[in-house]
Length: 514
Image (cartoon, rainbow, N blue to C red; front, side, top):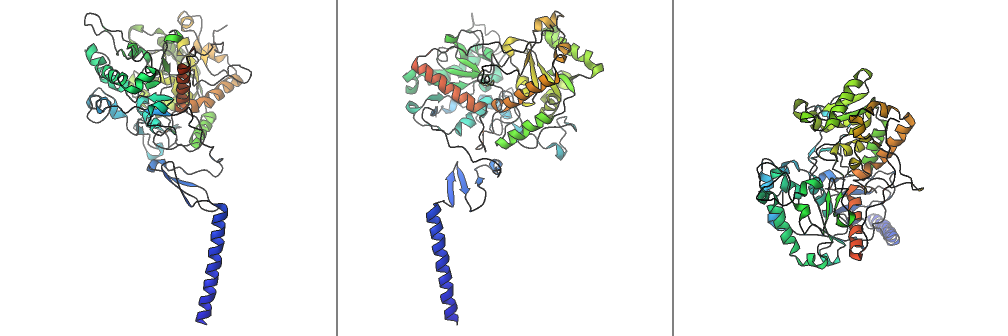
């Protein structure tokens, strides 16, 4: 009997083994597959689960999500990253920028994202958050406004089409942190030699490389995460350092490069223009398209009791009079409770350093006022987009239409620009011809809803994904747009095509009180 049982067992095992072999040969589906630096395990009739290199990078695929799109071809999209010598590794431990008490390298943790915003439900109220906190528990960080150089560098390391051969590259990326190097000695008693020294040495080294000589640096690009004005200090006369910043943008080497800054000089003629404005980093750095859709839903559903809001401070001696008028408008609106404000001069600016308080204000308002500051562009304008708050600009040079042309949404099929912002002439406000509250009150609920929806749709184009992980889902962010535009610009340069700006057209929403 025992021999019969053994024989039957062997028959069953043989049958099961044959069936399993047939299935494997038929479907040809590997049980284990290496992809994206990790292991994907495929099980019959189950969802794909990805195990990535970072614990923070584990992202479960939603069973409702469509399959990922096929990877784009790398033809014409290869990028080479320059391997800088150690002396030009700004923010490396032991470097002058890292050790300086005036530097900001210590704020660049988590690949530039900064400290994680802890869940408010855990009793974290150190940043002044209140019961109206709207920020989710994942994907949000206390990101420094000058962190883009670090964030961009880490994103580029995950770029799908990298090459070690600069001759095969469509573009050459220079991972030098110009703004972080400048930060400890931006102004003050530092002379021109100190301000220009490290950056000048890097550019001299860069321009001596064989890869530079091929196109004279015209295929090279870099990120400098300050406004263009901070890199346009002319050479000093008679040893006078003069003003703030350095001469990065007036050096002969950068006249051939493409440089990405937070604000460009829109009046510069196209043939001379080589710096292009890209968005400040926000506090939101998602790791999946689902996180983005979830935040957009929150922004749409947010209750907005304020007609308009402002986060900022007055300037001494009325040097920025438009800000005084904004505070006056908020004071006048107090009886109607139509204005929300965060005074960045109060309590040492603590309120404005709290991402939770800032986003709570902006998600509670229909319009967010964006007057001039030290320059035309403010990080606050990007924060407004993230909050689904309609930005109100007071100068043409502050508008996305003039500055962030790559990231502003394209016109619709009929060539019309979608209305998503308001432009109020600051001179008319200062002359008493236009009242801010009166002008904004004239927009109907339907017009406001339409503009807000356009702002919310722009959120993906203005955010930077988490640079430490492979993003789950199909979504282009600010980085993707920048790289595509830079490669296209360099392609046209190599072909000798005209590089004029996009055609301007009348897409402004002007609130003139008429």
